[in-house]
Structures are given as structure tokens and as C-alpha cells.
Length: 256
Image (cartoon, rainbow, N blue to C red):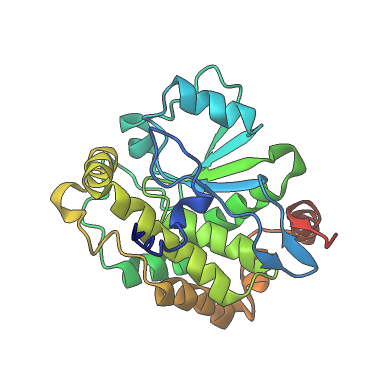
């Protein structure tokens, strides 16, 4: 009598959202999440890490996905060290540094994540609102927002967009936390890439790459405490009502 070995249960892969690029670890689609009046439209908003290692197949895939715009949130020195490898794709690259660092590294900037995120909310509101405005422009979509790890700057911008769309906070936190799994899958290579592209060297460690859900929730709360809501925070820093309307019209798929 043949005894069959039971197939072990395999947990649902976190890579379901990942765009399978050879040269990037953390590019993924944020479509399909529940939003006010429907779901976030699939294929319209991507988030990611550094794009300087893309190969021909990667570029062909992004072209096939009809990506129109890349919003690069990295500092100028990061872009110089590791320029986006998008030649020949026709994809427009918009440079929008969040911290506006002067020089060739982050220098003595803190790697304590709580302080970094607080500084983004308190000091970088204009850049965050400008990034959201570019995501909202219909001519920009589909749009890929990225930084070096696809975690902090990208995480805050995408969280703000999802909040404007009415995505529940707990879902936003789950999306943010996914980065920990994507970077963990290729942790050594990811750290080497980020050390090279950010100038942080050995200061870039596991703690700096952490993605605790409570951190992004606290960041959204900080925006709300400052201006009553995430929308109020972004409007106070340059977003317009028209941007908000466009964002909801283009990125929310109605039921059915």
C-alpha cells in the first residue's frame, strides 16, 4: 500500500504584489486595496526601491506595464551615484528630493527611524505634497514612486496617497510592512545596494531597514494632529482640492 506524504501547508506568498524585476527587490503594485467607493485601481500606482540595476528584461516589463512616470524621491547625490536605468523606455523621470540634502551623503543625519519620520512630517511637507500631486496627475499614470529602499520616503508618500483614497489605516500599515519581507528575501544584496547608493555605509543596518507598522500609523497620526487630517496636512503644504479630486477619480475603481 502506497502511503502519500501530505503536502505541507504553504502560507500565501507575500510576493504576490511584487513586480518580478531582476534589478530591484521592492517594486510592487498597491492596487486592489479597499478604498472609499471601491478599490485602488490595479496597475496605476507602483512603489519601489532603487532602479539603477534594471536590465533589458526589467525595462521591457515596465514598458509593457505602460508606466509613464517615475517619481524619484532620492537626494541628488543618491541619483548621481545610482542613476535610474530607464534609458530607451520613454518613461519620464521626475526628480523630487524629499530631504533636500546638500552634499554627497546624509552626513550626521539620524538613522533612528522615529526621528527620521517625524522630520519628514515636520520639515518636508512641501516635497511630500508635491509628490502626491504628481501621482494625482492623470497624464503621469501609471506612475512608479521610488527611493533607495522603497520604504521610508516612498512609504510615507504612498501611505498619504492611500489615506486620501480612503484605504483603512490597518491596510496601509500592512502594505508598509510588506517591505520587510521583500528586502529580507535578498537581504545581503539589498543592504549592499543601499549602502552604495545612499552613502550610509555600515550605519545602514537591520534596524534602519525595519518596517514596524506602528511607525507608519504614528506618521499618519502626526499629520492629523498637525492639520486635522492627512488631507488637511497635504493641502496646507501645497496640494489642491483639484489634485484630491483627480486622485480619487483616477485611482479608485468603482465596484463592478
